[in-house]
Image 1 (cartoon, rainbow, N blue to C red):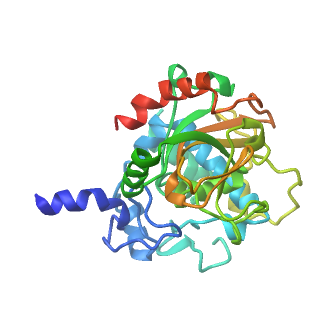
Image 2 (spheres, rainbow, N blue to C red):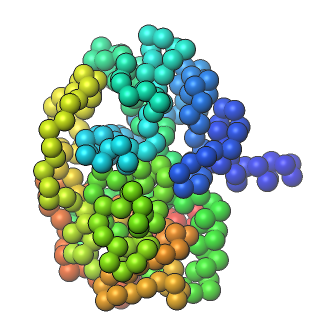
Length: 335
């Protein structure tokens, strides 16, 4: 019993198949996951270890749609060699001893069963890739019902987003008791969120992941003003023409009428909770937090066709804070 009590809180730090400790880009995340060893990937997808991914397709269809959109955006990006992390590890249906998608290789070799059958007709790799997109997500992201949405964000695509593992959340709460916390926005292009959901919100300043400048030093950039973060949620430069694999074209580029997200032009913004210690540097309405443990994602908002919400939201206004706590209180602090 003592061993179980010690082990259960750290399951997310180990491969669900071989039980070896993960070596992830930013440390462990919230959900358990499989490592990238070929045998573990084969056992995970072929033998059905953690096969609950099939249930997620049925109960979280809009989240699945969002995950696919994020994955596609990362793959479409000119920066895909940097931000498409993790890279899919998918068993080749025609040769179970090999991986069809492998970061070491540069080329791409009514019921859920009915969905799988239809996907197999489209392409034998369509379902394995979808399964990987769902199961590799190591954050807790769920669609919020209308009654629990933040009305001032003016979008129906609102999600609860928790990405911190238990250890980081515990450190965050300890720091919160000492220094207090507040809420601020973090905007980033959709191509970056595929990695964020799997590696966490990281301090990318002065690294290859940095997309914008770090005018105010190294750290995670936030703002209490929505318009500032909305400015970082999209990109103005058009995507250049690129060679696409036949799989990418067949899976991601066909028109799908039943999708929840109807547009490929998506803007994303997160509402984060940040510790208000002396480490938090405030340069007017641009905040920089150099301590990754002091920032935790709470909400995620998606806008279609370049539309954005109210540009004048200020998270420091009492009425805004009251609404945030109304929605967030019972969903995070009681869990």
